[in-house]
Length: 174
Image 1 (tube, one colour):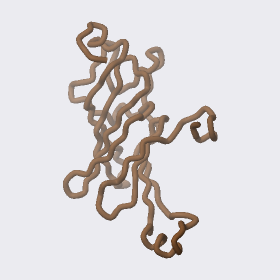
Image 2 (cartoon, helix red, strand yellow; image 1 turned 180 degrees about the horizontal axis):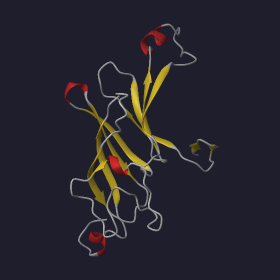
Image 3 (cartoon, one colour; image 1 turned 180 degrees about the vertical axis):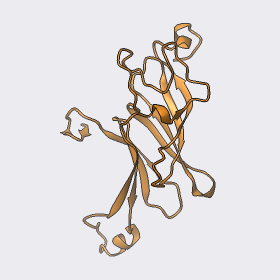
């Protein structure tokens, strides 16, 4: 049974792949979606609420949500570093349908949050969309500044894909 925004077992995007916020003292997680967006959920006052719940659970936990990336054009946010080149283009686009490439993330199917120095958070994103030129993987530093600057996604790897030239030439492992 699947739950989507349209309800149980209905066609639509799913939220998946919770990754806990690894910082000390945080009750929070980052969650992705098969629609290509992801964000950070912060649950507040957990210890106080649980200690005042008389051995049960409170009816609700207050919290906040920070959207890192919506289902919008990410091409200008992707930094390829000279890699991720396709015969027909590059890894700034998703080719799950080569006749109609997507300019967003598609089917985020792997998401892991890491903590670096000074409590700086990073996310690793992996797609599983059926990209004909290979599934993409990115690393992005996460930030909460409301400065109008979008996240940057650093291209890490690409694998598989029926039209990937390394797959076509038989010099890669699917």
